[in-house]
Amino acid sequence: MSKTATKRSGNTAQKSDETMLKELFIDELKDIYWAEKHLTKALPKMSKAATSQELANAFQEHLAQTEVQIERIEQVFEILEMTARAKKCEAMEGLVKEAQNVIEEQPKGTMVRDAGLIISGQKVEHYEIAAYGSLVQLAKTMGENEIADILAQTLEEEKQTDQLLTELAVSGINISADNETEE
Ligand SMILES: [Fe+2]
Ligand SMILES: [Fe+2]
Image (cartoon, rainbow, N blue to C red):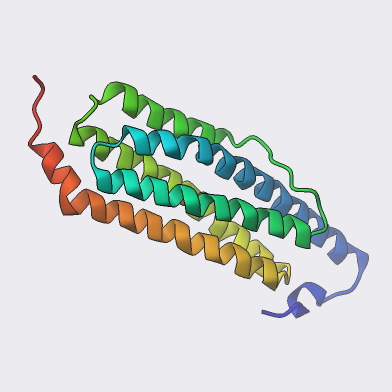
């Protein structure tokens, strides 16, 4: 919680370690910035493709959250006195492609499609949870507590979204999907 950890030794070796960790942090921040922006294009498509209104709403609501999350990242860049820059996130590009495959492969109007979309959504959330969890920890280590607090808010939202998707799956969508047969 304090900066003492990073100030244990004030010599230059310590300082250069700090800079390298900060560079790693910034690199990861650029990655998730790209990922979140990419998601603002994917989530509306996932919402539109969903069969159940509940799932469509969940993706729509997460889109609104994602827009705020992007602003939080920009806030973090500001605190670091940097221009916000994105760096292509190959993982998120791949996860979004997988979601698109679900939409192409699972017939429109089926609950199986929703079950598939939930899996895709949860894979996305888990990537984000890993990314934000790591960023929060790195920020704490660097004594950047304000940044840690900002990113912890997003981390909590990603966890809640993951949880919501689990609930939608187990409360009905998977069961309905289990009753569907191919024509
Ligand atoms: Fe997000
Ligand atoms: Fe998310």
